[in-house]
Length: 156
Image (cartoon, rainbow, N blue to C red):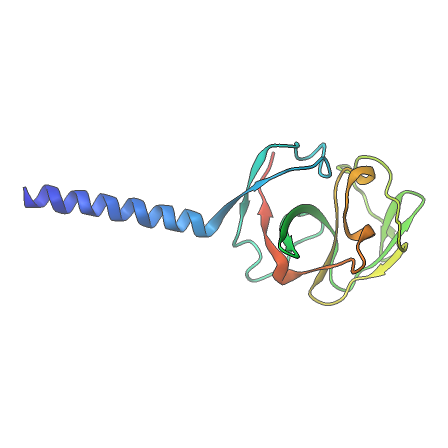
């Protein structure tokens, strides 16, 4: 009887440890708007990996979850630290080269400015649904800091 009790406790501990590890590694994000369509659908939940950017920052094209002023958002990384970004004629140019964006829906226009120089540890982000996204193009301070990034969205 004592062995059965120990075995039960062991299974409970393994379950709790596994749940704790999963909770520390994965998160769940809800997509409340159409800003990432057609890539991510409105109203769906997508898992995100919390540990992706511990040793390095995101790559251009990564879809990230980030916290901006206490609100969690989901956008695509367009500009990396040190990049010079130009928005011209509905297109995005990175360091003078046209960015190939097969995921982008609509034209990319700016509101406040059309050129950006991304500072160290900062990123320029945009939604895939360019004509329906409140993103870096429209913010007073157009960048998010690496520390604000919560994880990398897992989709497909």
